Image 1 (cartoon, rainbow, N blue to C red):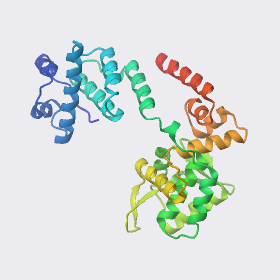
Image 2: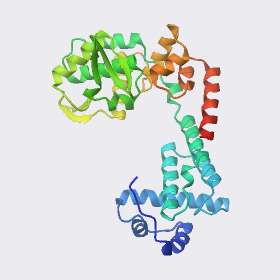
Image 3: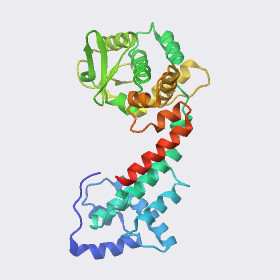
Image 4: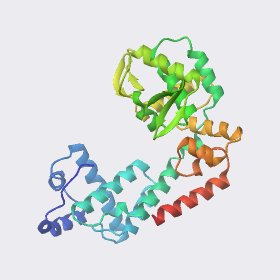
Length: 317
């Protein structure tokens, strides 16, 4: 979000009264946000604030300033009929309006943050629904595309391989750069959040083949490729990586539906079968809590206990 100066103290009372009605024009929104936002952004802000004011009027509470409990209840009730992304945007809008009027931002309160995290987990249970991407899937894809010289095929094989071997999230894959590749005594690694992730010989060879054929020497490691097969400068983003895994689903034609979370689920289960503990898997996957790896491997009791401990810790921070 862009940095904005709060309103002049002499203007706050009048502006507060207008905002509490919820009927501001686009021109008024542009003025109060110092003309830094586009027309579409201003429309979104105006509509979000109108929804929040309407909720407050129904509840007979004040929108500006609002109580933390009001914003939390707004998020919880609105999430029943709107996408979580829209709810999150509305909460941000409420916080922006409060900051502009020099009121404490209720969206930053831990009660609201915890509620949003809980709603996000409930609305987007990707990790629970994701089909595990396992070693036999990776082997089948590599066998199918092994002879291909197309850059897209080499890149996608690399995406599938790195994400599975390194338990990488889509954001971690997207952030990889050439500088993250290191070699120590003939062993290749990629650096992910200051953690060395070892690569198998086959994946290291695939990575070297990718760098050799693309001529990439610096910058993003995994890049976009246009419909003509031409390599771009921009890195793959999480949405593009999601589509790469959807492509894996189509190529295997096994009625499976992979997502960007699938390799972390599959790799976690594979490591558990090899005798690794939840704590060891947590370290390998760089999770802050053992809750998700426990859930991935089917240990729901340990998962719920870890989630409960993590929530208590966040509330006391």
